[in-house]
Length: 314
Image 1 (cartoon, rainbow, N blue to C red):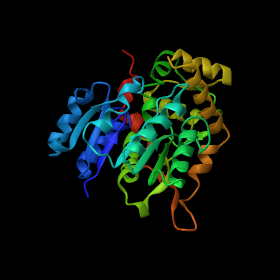
Image 2: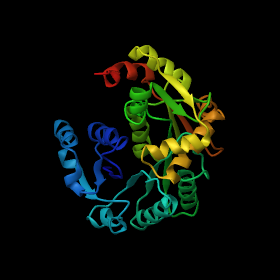
Image 3: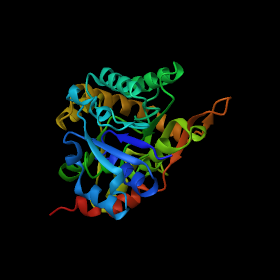
Image 4: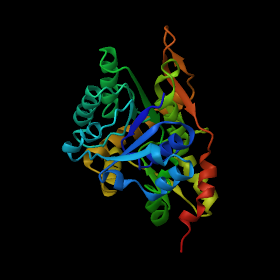
């Protein structure tokens, strides 16, 4: 069988390594979404496909969360999709919009949907947790054959992207997570878990994949690692919930998204990720995979050392 997979956000942070893994390790046809359709596929991904003799399996299609008229476009392209990788756009209509798109996918015969959520976002929790519930209900009602939810911890790339300006300008990390530990994870480790969720046969599929790195670090401990690697003092400044919301808004996100991020910090502060990290894979009485604890191989310290030049002051 040669499945055809639709990757929403297929050129983004998680989508790019997933696209490359699918092209290099599987025979799947890969269709990535962008606002520009095929023209939006970066040349680096096209070149990767050519090097792996997979150019004929890569295509693009127009899709834009902000333009409802494009939501049907992938399914009107003449392709039949077996699997959809779904990255929600965080806004006040997140749940409503994703339910609507899921309904479109189901109408067109998609048999498996893989949702990107977060380690601290359980089923029925805000946002992606509500979408998780909708997928579960859809399967129980016979509308959807299979689903999986990816629940990664915070990305290593936060240190080189989202946190970069605070590290460079203020010498600090900021959060409302207090002493809570996180299973910081490499994007390539997320891609490997996603590959399994997208392509594993039904008997090997789990409902949820908690994806973490090999080690747990609090923000205090991550700041100490940074201090050691880049050679200047980095500290963790602890924020109140209100201060944390203000900080996220300063970074350019909506207040709705900011409050969601602070709820995640609060879950981390309660020890949620540490508890999940210590769990074992869980199966139901019927042998169905419920929760897989996916621990990556790539360490945060190695990532920081490999990228030390990013924080070098000119």
